[in-house]
Image 1 (tube, rainbow, N blue to C red):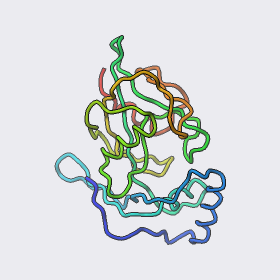
Image 2 (cartoon, rainbow, N blue to C red):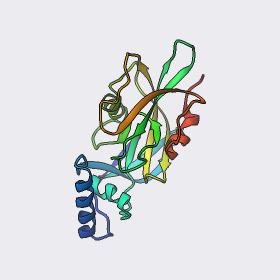
Image 3 (spheres, helix red, strand yellow):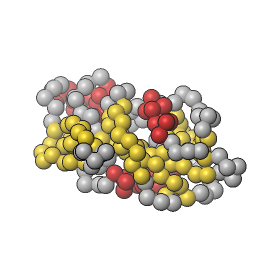
Image 4 (cartoon, rainbow, N blue to C red):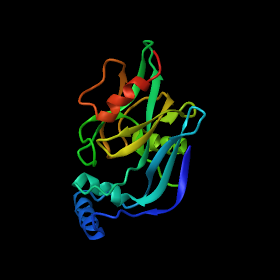
Length: 209
């Protein structure tokens, strides 16, 4: 469950002038960055029914993006990640993985599970995951996503709501967007290297076989 706290988070430090200058440099390097809204995680608590409540407040994306430049604003966004799976003709289950491009802020050229992205305010996590799936891979889900875990990624300074989702098979696997150099269906034990740290943590969450 995601609990939205009213208001907007603005970091006390570093100074906004320093943040804006770093953001301008990022935009010069990659014009695809845009200053949308993210959900900053204020805290996480158990709900007493086997789940968790994630307490969030809206924040500007640029406050998160500049952390990659060494300016830690304290923003820890809430994201969604998927373990997208299909059953192969050989009986082996496979998961969709992508090698990130060199234009992303975190984990360039590393492999991770696809899809993933920051959760936008007012959007249900499962809906956001399906949107990212279509944008990043062109695939469609065969059934609704199932939430399985909440993980913190200390390397990317983000919280991630992890879902499993079965994918509708189709021919072709070319990445339609700019975030990935390559997409690949990967069986257990055949994972390409190097993996991102969060991908390594997600591996045990895959369903059997």
